[in-house]
Length: 294
Image 1 (cartoon, rainbow, N blue to C red):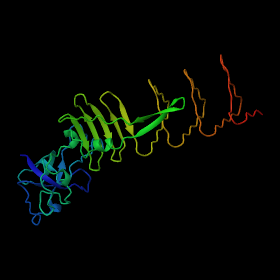
Image 2 (image 1 turned 60 degrees about the vertical axis):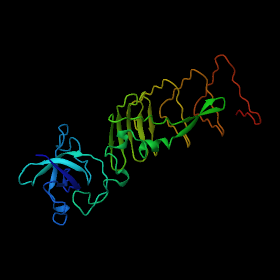
Image 3 (image 1 turned 90 degrees about the vertical axis):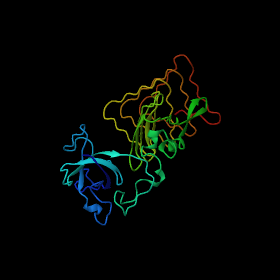
Image 4 (image 1 turned 135 degrees about the vertical axis):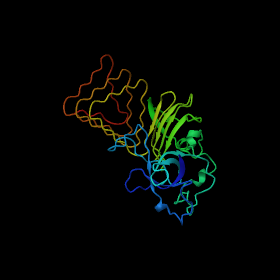
């Protein structure tokens, strides 16, 4: 026989994913008669793809205080060994009453600003308002890069093509605000990983990828790295660019090179400098200074 209940405590001292759950038809809502701390620990039944052995598999955590769950009692009539295997969503209409059972004792869930709407995450329902989609659209990055001849162009971060429709966007949303989306909406298929700080990776329907890091990035390649860029590569460094090559550097440019330095250019070489123009001239001029050869 299945039972429904509400999680009132998930802080399992043995860290096994157990929860103290108040079960309908078994426990009273009167917390004077039955306090949260006196509820038995309910064991989570994990999915078959999780080994639940020696750290192999998925951590058995997920429900929060206030979550409705479904489960069974192994000992049935005695109802002292409960297990739970699923959660139940709904449309909450009131905030929690911490003085009454079958509520979040911390009075956090359900969240007040999400009352009277489905527990299904807004992104999964195709809603942009007050989500990471809105945050990203309001904080688009901009950059500039030279295109030769003293000219430059500006470029803006591509906007998220979010156009999710229920029930095709598979969303994982954590309490602190981390997000994962696997959106199967036809014509708007995306894969999106978002950190609550604002850093994210998003693959767009056409295969384009946008990566944004709001702080530092450190990349270590302990073997060989090969990069093939079929079209243009544009870079905008607001600070300094420092490069150390401990071997040789080989550069081949099929077209022209236009290098413009607004400050001073220092070129220091320990050995020879060889400059060859196969069919043209080598021109050096200074409109107002001197050319010194020592």
